[in-house]
Length: 401
Ligand SMILES: Nc1ncnc2c1ncn2[C@@H]1O[C@H](COP(=O)(O)OP(=O)(O)OP(=O)(O)O)[C@@H](O)[C@H]1O
Image (cartoon, rainbow, N blue to C red):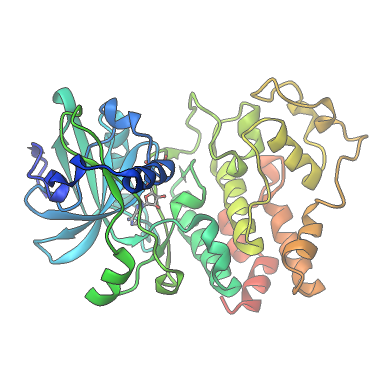
């Protein structure tokens, strides 16, 4: 695909006059769309590239729906008219972030031995943005957008298979010393199975959307992202979002990771992200898939620290005084005080969330969890070790994964 910079292209149906007539129902719908979509001000700031459903980019990709958004991008479902297939377009904010992610994709494609579980680009182009800026666009395979909390409605065996595939994907990055650094449920995507036009029409429906306003440099719409029915979700799982990937051993300015329920505790005590901190985040995802909900919570302050300590016991003494927020408790680091809460520790989660499980299964799952949730990163299990770990393998065998 060419690297030429492409000016804004003709619009689809966002040029229609329907936006001029707004009644109360439309205003209610707009409020609902705003609640669940990317922040509008990021369009006003020239960060997100305004897009309309039906718009054709670079004379080739017709925008069909919105798949998601993140801090650095909006992601759209589009029809590739040249190859007659659906793809995902990740339109980055202007500047270094987009270029960095593009370079990381190229590095991964060239160096990772097995990219079969990684969401890597199939091409890329640049779009002209506001005031001479350019937006990098990555053409990605179309997958089911992250299911987030909806995962819990999938059968446990499907979730366990996802946990194993995700570990294989992570190991392929770790194998060449790459730290993902942003491992959370948004990076986990499921295969989109083949679908026919009738099924697609049913689940795509008519995208709910609102006009972004005449004040922008280009017409665009705020579109509610598509919800894929769970029964359409395929069984293969992919790891994506390589915008923050670094080589292990790199020192970074921002140590912490949001969302905080996935952040390794040493990163909130001044340590750089590492292969081991990825493994903590992986274990958070594993636990969420196993139990059907996150095991840690909060926004990186007292609540998050307390959720670690009440389930895993006091943190290492040498970390005391290094917590990134002024919001912390002395007794988090005091091993004389046993802060484990028997009603909330990891073992208790089986009673609340997986009462169907046998004692043998609980022992295996707890053994896996504790190997990943080791406070000291040097004692934490690696991806390669976990794939060979007898408890992990026996647990996966129970689910025929
Ligand atoms: N290839 C794809 N197919 C379907 N949906 C996708 C695809 N890539 C990304 N998405 C959806 O778009 C969302 C945003 O993508 P992503 O997390 O890569 O963006 P980001 O701007 O880098 O976000 P973050 O702030 O998390 O780093 C994802 O959570 C996912 O649901």
